[in-house]
Image 1 (cartoon, helix red, strand yellow):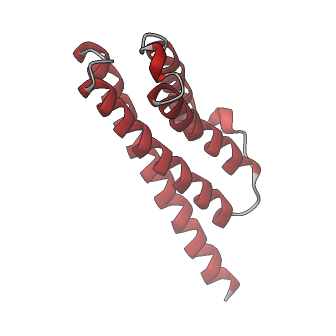
Image 2 (cartoon, one colour):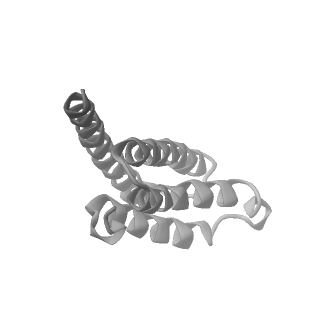
Amino acid sequence: MQDFHNLVVWQKSHAWVLTIYNLTKRFPDDERYGLTSQLRRAAASIPANLAEACGRGGQNEFGRFVQIAMGSASEAEYHVLLARDLGYLGTQDYDSVHPAIQEVKRMLASLLKRARGQQSSQRETDN
């Protein structure tokens, strides 16, 4: 078990969520229960799943929750693209949040690879 606050990917994804919440305040009111809600939920799911991963025992569960965080990051990335294409996000806002979520996804991929490597090492030790 580890403290999720110490994970740089958690720190970056948390900061990204705060940015998303601020940006979505400007979305149309009729999107409150649509795109605004979906984007916020997907974004917040990234650091939430990392926190849960750190609270679980064992590398298998850790890897599973990192994988869920990766899925949420991909979903959020799409919602940001959709918001841009619908005109809810300007080019400047999109150009600031899109590279940030791509960085988070790269970090999650690396974390997942390490977690799976540790799973393999643990299985070899158990045999």
